[in-house]
Image (cartoon, rainbow, N blue to C red; front, side, top):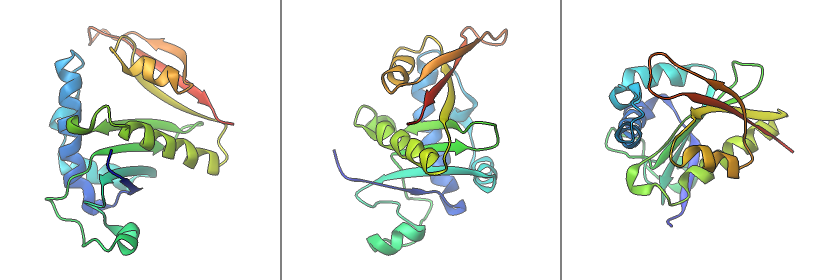
Length: 176
């Protein structure tokens, strides 16, 4: 696997993050888990980036590197042509930090990108002295639920939905 650079997203990254969401969530939609993320636009992502949350982006070998990380890698400023291989958010509006919007480009799925991003979110939560990280995923997804369990996340609550043919499960991981 190529070396990944992970950094905090900026407003200038919104178009590239929106493209990544559309690409990554299309595979979930093909599995029967449709998401509004398959039609997300850059304006909506830009609004999310303005909220109090940490959005991380991963790029391969320094592509799409901007902001503070760019100074150390020598990369130019971001453009709409930049692409990311993954992204994730740590939302801190709840009592416990909440991992959300994990997305990996289809060409990079299975290459450890999600692992690196979630590791970084968990590290950030530890640094901020949180006791745990929470998330919600599909309860019968063919690999996500098991992947999170292998990472130490335990189901805490199941949510039925009359709007969907599937249910959701909330999960939590205690941080050491």
